[in-house]
Image (tube, rainbow, N blue to C red; front, side):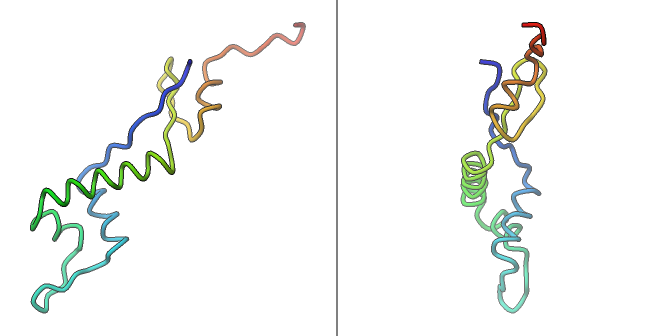
Length: 92
């Protein structure tokens, strides 16, 4: 096998942005806050779990395939498998 699946690895800022896209702003005592930033500050454990859930969903729905030889990333396994394989000779 010439390819393997790579797990998504998100920074806290990327998780905050994704949570903001999903939940928008939250109202706390009449003030609006970023949902992602509020969750990170108020409940770091829940924030970490949300990051794991987002990565798990993206790993399942949008896997990243990597060529084992050159580490190039692809959206599907066939392209990653074919990456560093030599082209067959036309004479063969």
